[in-house]
Image 1 (cartoon, rainbow, N blue to C red):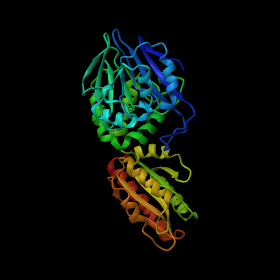
Image 2 (image 1 turned 90 degrees about the vertical axis):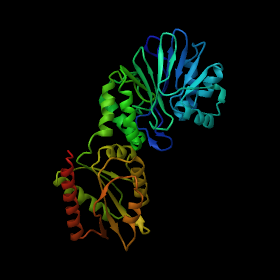
Image 3 (image 1 turned 180 degrees about the horizontal axis):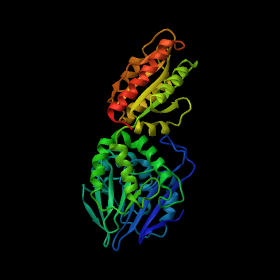
Image 4 (image 1 turned 45 degrees about the vertical axis):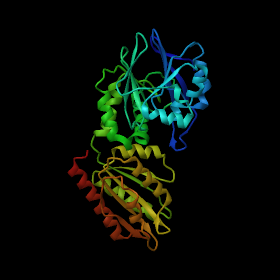
Length: 392
């Protein structure tokens, strides 16, 4: 794809990846993604903000064919999906200086073996004059690595936000045209990547919203011509209350746990509680992460395998612990054959979750009438606690 004009002497460059379906060998990409770089031609200096994955370097270099001189490369974030092509760009423009944050310098030297003399380090709030255009660098640590920063183009009121406000989506649209579609992609992106750091992200969100921003240009996904759309969404995901929602990741082996899950879901619905149910053998893990953004309660459903939880449930618990959702309550339901320590093992796996644990319900074999009654009581307890918290 050729460079695309954003404003006078400001261009999108990069690569739209329609085909990749897994990011970092971990994160599902149902809609592909894009790797966005941005070229700014000032009256005196020219700068490239971020690059692309190294495997797509040829595309970026072709887009730079008509750029005779590059004075600066800005690395907002050291992760290779943004920094991977820096060595190739520096090879073409050996006099260019690499601008980054103090913490990113060491990372880029380690990850890409970039020589130390190439770097210019910028402090929080430092500016760079391009002649008639001025970039201000704003440190935004833990969005989502410790070295991250964003860049604000003062004269054009454009925030180049790198992973902040990103969305994994491949599209021919330079600007967001379908906000509903982008909302889901951005929420998935936030849930999978940003949610563990939401307390730091809140501070950085407060920091950047002090600026007069007309356009947000992230390094994944389309450009936002209406910044309030994505800023308000992040405020809700970070600060908004949990919802009257139970997220129920589960797996079953001989359908005893499935019978419990089915009965429990029906009981929750009868008590006015919404449910999102995820079979961990087949689910899109990104959908589970998105649901966790809003969950008031997490209930894990598992059979017992070799005296402990099913391995797929272990993975689900590990994921929830890593993502640190703002849910207030947690419980466990499931079946066992002769005994085990399923509850103890799972409880020990979620130290990051600041939740109240509600009494689990475990059945020996098929659920008995007493087990079903306990599930009814669990549903009623969750409904009561949600009402007390004001979840809607």
